[in-house]
Image (tube, rainbow, N blue to C red; front, side, top):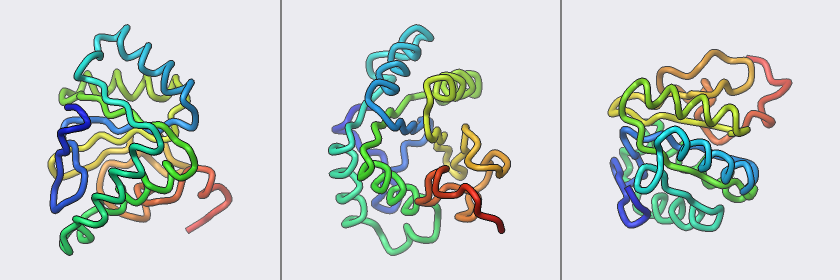
Length: 159
């Protein structure tokens, strides 16, 4: 995948077989790129997005989204990416279709201070890093941490 490819479902970004990772700082993203390369993920396997690039992509996705996109979690995730980009977050999209690759990418994301790491499957978007005190995301539901709130925005909240 590269930035000219834009895998989507119902008009919004959905890179099936990839992990989308967000970082508070460019240096954390740099460290992750280095660790990913050491683990064999480099070249076309890793695509970087600056906050500005992600904002442009999010605006495009929201403008093109099918009305059906709001039925799934994809549009919520696009909006969440936009909110993180507004706060200056950097993003990596890593091709990791196999379970072992996904585990490795998730471990690297955690060790490099990622805020979020989400594996896009055909039907499920799996949260690879715990968000707040909730269990790990394994099915699509807006109250399970996939929507626009960041971890810091959840602290102190109870259901």
